[in-house]
Image (cartoon, rainbow, N blue to C red):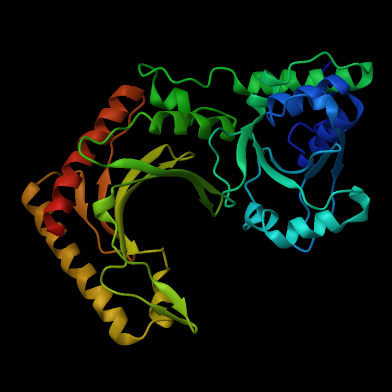
Length: 371
């Protein structure tokens, strides 16, 4: 019997944070292996190490804090633990801010003797390559953890709980590799665990290659009204304007060169649909209503005039092309919509080839219209 499964705590972040802190504090072999193999610190036994949960700061409450001290060196480790939840609003950005670090250094509970220390940050997640908002955080997966900290825990009770947790994680990471001859529906859409499905989606999308510059720039999740979609943003440097809109004195300063053109491949995981809209948006993205409300009329007209001009050229090219899977579109973000047919038998290889085919077609259209 698996105790972690029985208690239903596998993806309870607070409880798993408690487990990790307990392992660091109570198991010498786990602590030393964690410090050496995850933090890349040699001679871990030279440090006095203490781990904590729920230490409050003015920026919020990081999941795990670890202090490491000896006569020559002092280190502070901040760990944000994410299992199936997404990062809270700018969490890692806030936790890597100097004010948060000062709050921790000054906290008497941590008993830090040396206030001049090295700070390190870990974003511990189930999902590989999950990008935190705070660029100081390093993404470490639970797969990295269980593969690199493979030790025999001394305490039998702690060992039993940890081994049960590791067993669940091994099952989670099993069979996530993509075979290009597998059927897309079976591999991705029919996956019951939506986090596993997202990892498979990422593995599929990473195999999409543009022939002359287009590449996958961003992969993420979007939801609303009970729906869940995965998206991949596909673009290239020449599709991105040279300037960025700035928000100054409650007004957006935007020019005709504040644009971001990209394809946004979207998987509707529940309805088993794939769409590939072509977006022409402000850079950075600003919802249309807010842009109109917070931009002076002259600046807005400069931006929208160029957008309408490029959109018109794109629509003309689509009409001349005569491909029924590519249609003009007049949305607040979308200027064209590409249908990627999916049936029960389409393989991952065929799906990728279909995406790449329309990437080439759309790339030629957009490049021509931007000249």
